[in-house]
Length: 328
Image 1 (cartoon, rainbow, N blue to C red):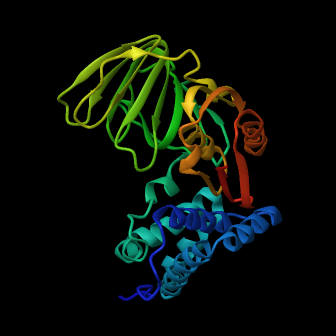
Image 2 (cartoon, rainbow, N blue to C red; image 1 turned 120 degrees about the vertical axis):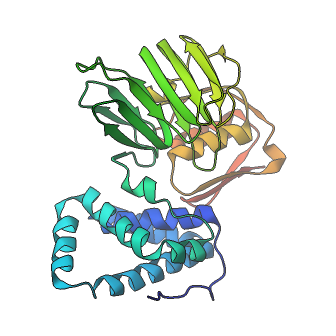
């Protein structure tokens, strides 16, 4: 079996390829005219965007051609599954890519394909906060661009944080099953509690902060454990857990749509703000060390940038709505 080769195209940066694949999923799921306009604007914003889009689109066309050769019964099953829902369309696309061309896509993009993000049970979009109540009564809030899977069985209730940030308010399970939040770093087990867990793509560490109750943290290697109490936070990876530290009172401010900065470097502030908007938000190294303090609503990131211009000696340079640099 062979697939369309994209080896003759220059390699795009992984972040741009990831954005292109996000747009691909969007266009597979009943996009609105506004969605299509934003997609076209993103492609036109930078030549690298268009190149990444050509890569992903070319590979998808090759996969479509392969799927068309499936036997009639298999093809009927594909049509049935794809027609059920947006989630079904996402899963079907991911299944085709994952089963038939994982190696091809990795070779084309230079990065492993984000299958788990695409096929997660629950996802939030850029700038979106999503509140869920799970079958056991656990309340789960997803921050911007986050994804989780849930795996409930007779032994345990598992919430798998695929990417992003969540707040968990544990429910009382009638069957007495433990609740476990799983990340790439390890496991967080609540003891009647409310807490936040954060893990972003490309980061090897998990951040945890406890607002109520306590949690027990265990690294994936199994060598380190820590009990974290109310008002404490820590960071851990697969092998070790940092000592507990006092947690800022506003550690869960994002659940109310706010971003609190306490003497942050401007570069760090913009990196955090960038999680809530599409496109690229860059900081000129010349202004990276300016300090930011304040409370900022993340529903309108353009408004936040205008405010930054008023309180700091910087200027916001917008090539397009999706390509912004803060500098002199």
